[in-house]
Length: 377
Ligand SMILES: C[S@@+](CC[C@H](N)C(=O)[O-])C[C@H]1O[C@@H](n2cnc3c(N)ncnc32)[C@H](O)[C@@H]1O
Image 1 (tube, rainbow, N blue to C red):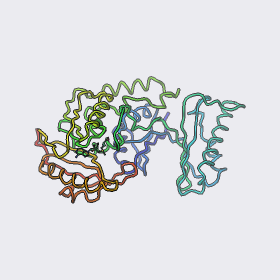
Image 2: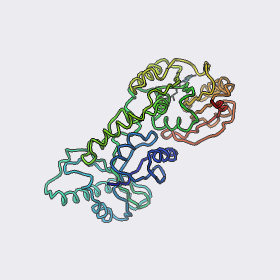
Image 3: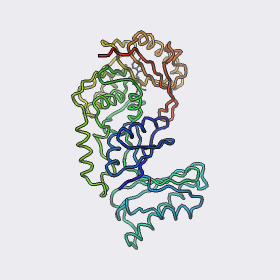
Image 4: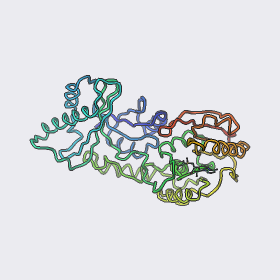
């Protein structure tokens, strides 16, 4: 059966998510924070397994205009929920509402729940309550400008939870954003890669996964694995496919470093958990001492932003020292994510390109300095 699927995306990453969906072979449409595509059970499993920059994959169960609670109830009840939900399904309903007549989210949730219960009662010929002790189907009713979209989450924990993070530092980057930062560069796995502010190692680990084409979901499970209408053979097929497509022989030169030796230890533990073992090197080092052995490398980094009162001056001094070390490395490309609006001035060079991105709720810019192109081999 074909479903309408939605890959949800952080603001600003829609084009990257859409590219990933197309690379999996599905035509898609892009809206704010949503990439919509059609696919079968295999598409649900494959998109969960492979999308590096999306937040979740959801099934769109229905979409309609709803100005009154009656309308919301009747149109929700008209959806064939029995196609998705077995008799023992656990189906909590969450909601949100923006610019809509139906603004009471708790009422909308209750009405959607009631409508689904009625629909399933008729279908399963049930007179008592549903026990809800079976597989989980998280339903969301999202109202935007009086249009209700009803979705079922297929991912479970968000796709940023790759399963490798055993520990973290103070301000870890979401894995999905880290993967996006790497994908926005000109890095190819034959070139050196470095993150000199590696914290818990997220960027370096995501680069290694990309470099060896290891599926981001390889180390985890998805809630839709417990649904009986997605045969386990599909999940086996997707895991075998991921195993076949991984390029474990691809040599990599990826280094993460941090001034704080505790971060180095955490990064090593996370990389080990990701199954990358010695593939990524971590070491204790100040960015001011960055001195690579090879040319034509790529730096992707998320330094401290200095947002806390009193930190700004020290951070800007550090940016200045960083510029002194990195600007002369003209074969290296440097990509820095920071919220500091004066970054280019302090660093000492205007960026080749800037891109607005959100790190959680913090508005940041991704400053991109393109180095000389490597000679053709
Ligand atoms: C925002 S965190 C990086 C978080 C990382 N992207 C992650 O996902 O965990 C910034 C890191 O820069 C490190 N740092 C601060 N000053 C530094 C310096 N001068 N040289 C190298 N690292 C530094 C801090 O110890 C901290 O771990």
